[in-house]
Image (cartoon, rainbow, N blue to C red):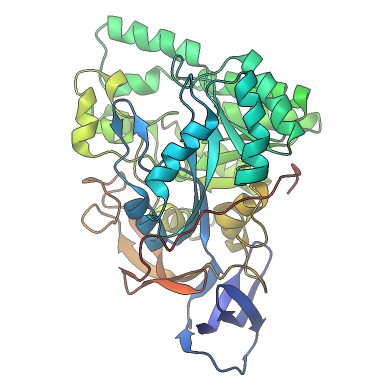
Length: 460
């Protein structure tokens, strides 16, 4: 099927211009002004922005965690993503200690195959690096197209690896042409503070925040950057929240090292005062926690300075009943919040409409940079001839209110209840198919396919 998109304003990471777009099959075949072609269908984009489909490189769908599973599976989560203008997600496969990477991959494939509505890929989280795991790194890169490997510097006993394992992994991933990403918080210090507050009877959600002060993130971010510098591996810090951690990335730049940094939409628009709402604060219990206003300012500045390249979500939703698991103890509240559907609209409303970032920067941090960093560009993340026809028709002026009553995520509350945003996703194309139109999903579960990614060169 061919689709002609007329009269829209095309926005990419480096240009804004008026043009038509012709889609044939799954890809873009022509871009030009007043294209005189016959198409099976014509979409009028007058008054709308035509942008690359968003890429969210940090989601957790149907993930086992703290005795339960995140509440969005691959169908509901990717449906919500499409409604918000995100056409590609990257999830995390979590190795379990004592088992292989292949064992973990098969478990995630069992939960994702035939269920996704948008395209997806995997990062491989290595939690038990040993001689057998080392041998699997090449297999993941060469055979599976999984080129990014996540490490945890927290969650001792379950996910955390020590610095010796970190260096070993970094050396092997570098040799195979991959990238190491990190959850950079000091797990030992956090565990000490959690135990201290619990012993003192301080068990409200506020103490989740107080048990992860800024130093826990800035120290770990600096240590990770140092180890990456020593080994020379391409390095990426996920869900950066604070000025102290950002300054470690800036410090690395002084020695000519490139450390990629991702923040998440919640850290740009929400702050730690939400934890003061008694148990209602559990809605925003995530790790790392929400920070201070000064950290929001630093992160917005980091985006404009190019020190923060990606805005993701760390989407890991739980129902309110699941959050109640920690009613008597903050350390038992499942960590995570729902955001996959709102990332693009919130970033546009709070960023572009409030003059914090440009239209081009919006596309850069919501789509293009993730495609480049994680080996998908130019098939994904841009509007160009030959690129996948993942396109968003976006009304920059429509005002609407976010609510659990209208969102498509599988949660019975919204972390953004009552937020008024300006800018709304209207129509979404996913590899040439109209995926969202008039607020309705038009593609079936299983239309989304797994994307094998190319080796990285550590440069964007």
